[in-house]
Image (tube, rainbow, N blue to C red):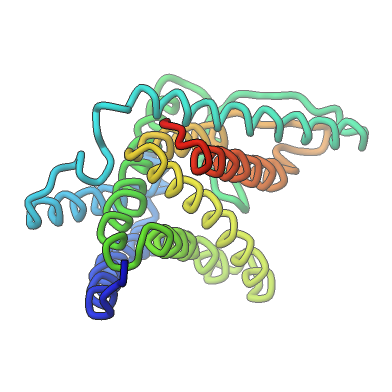
Length: 283
């Protein structure tokens, strides 16, 4: 099917406009309000704004949440696939982390407590019903906001003009850029030099892109966003709660654990996608 150039341009402008508007709200929350440093322990305002933006667009275009992948039919199956991906890939990555630490005489062991996670540092908030509730609710809002915007609305808006692969590539790229605010903030606060930020930022961009691209493929394979929703939630929750402690610190190889899990998860989805493409398997 030939893609109309005007249609492509119009879709890209709408997507970028919504992305920039949501990004401004996100930047204000991260850099000015800093809700992650309050008792909320999460940047949820920008995610709530994303949900509101998606709801507004759906209302204006007379569409429903089910039209962007939030279908009740398929939710249970998506939950099983999403949690299975998260559990399997993190089980492997935790095991590899343990082996490496053990071989280096670090005496690793697992500990369950809640932190407000970032990739460069994590502030311990302890373990209680309150902190657990904040973690669960905060992650649920975070996942709903990001999945509805990127894997839901952006793929829906972009598919007709850019094609499925083009729309998925675009939303994955934007998802990576979406996470760059943390790196900018660390430079502004003096906790990271510009040269460190460039290296760290590229790594952050690639990791976020991998997951976003994978979850976009899952949305295409299943016709819903549920696989991405539940793996996204699991990944965030496990990073916030299950930690590897050693004689010299906590989560010293967390970034390695996350890289292994992300790459393994994408690999599994790509293999399933190829098998489905060849055998017309229905997920």
